[in-house]
Amino acid sequence: MKSKKRRIFEITGYVVVGLFFTLAVVGLIIKFNKGTLYIFNNRADVVLSNSMSVKSEKYKDFLEGHDNQIQKNDLVISSTIDSEENLNIYDIVLFNSPLLGTTMHRIVGKELYNKDSFSLDLVNTCNYKGENVIQLPEVGSQITSDDTISFNEVKLVVYSPNQYSDGYSFVAQNNLMSTEVKTEEKEGFYKHTIIARRDSSAPTKFLLVHKNYFSYEEDYIVNFSMNAARGEININANSITSTGETGSYYYETNWTYKYVIRGDANEDDDGKFTIDSIYSKVHTTIPKVGAIIRYLSSIWGIVLLIGLSVIIVGTDFYLDRMKKKEQTKSDIAEETETKDDN
Image (cartoon, rainbow, N blue to C red; front, side, top):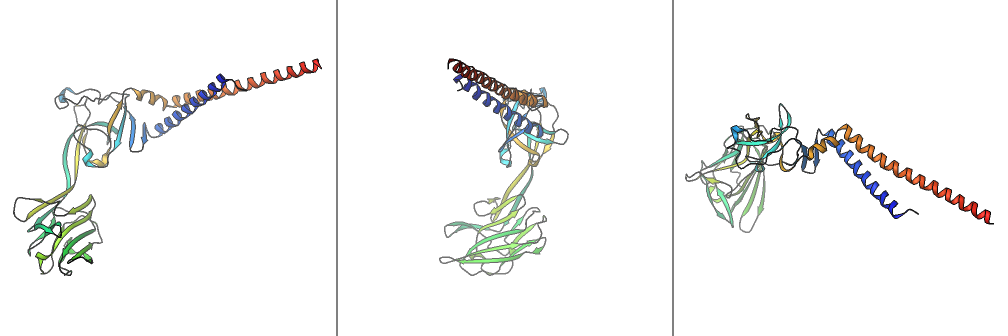
């Protein structure tokens, strides 16, 4: 029967072996991912340069109060970026540099690059059946995109005391879009859902106007939506903003930006980058741990971990075998002594 010390040694040894093998596997993963370890929506990277280690004299005033410089061989943990709202000036990000590949520097500027915007002319807003709604009360009332936009389907939801009169034109590339209408009868009014489609999603201007005369003032637009390439568009009475002129409103969404990025120690910017080039935003820095990870993910580090594991397992096997030999000799000696006594 194994002694208590022997059992403790075996348990400790196998725990250490498991840890070494785990580190070896992690090291291989990091090596194949070129120094990066992915954990769900986070990634861990080893800092390989001093470009974020100090503040450049040229930009000391700009960086005042931002003392989160990062040193070579630190380990940084960052979270993936899925929205422009998560990126701001002074954030430290990992991005794709055309010259250096994956790089970690700071956002130092932000400028509007693109957006989806609409103008609403000669319109009213009011309340109907407990909802804030939009009206197109005049012949010239319209909703139009300010610039070209990529889409292939729009949906208009209208409340009305009347049956649908097919009174709207959905125009893209100067062509009428085909429409499909679904009508539900409510308590004292109708809900008309008009879906307009086009075969192409090529960028174009869009226009919603009246097709023919009907009682414009008795139609109440609850929502106008579009499946635009940059994101969903939803125009309603709560999402539009007055221009200050009577009957004139505008709507903006899906803003995209270009970000100016620069290392704290550098005097020159890396350039301007869109969110497509930005991988993640740094939220945690662990000093100097990167040096250990770099070694463990190297060929020599992996060989060392596997070698130590083999030595521990081999030592345990050798001790176990020697114990069995000693037990066998003891059993033989005891058996011989018993025979002599007999």
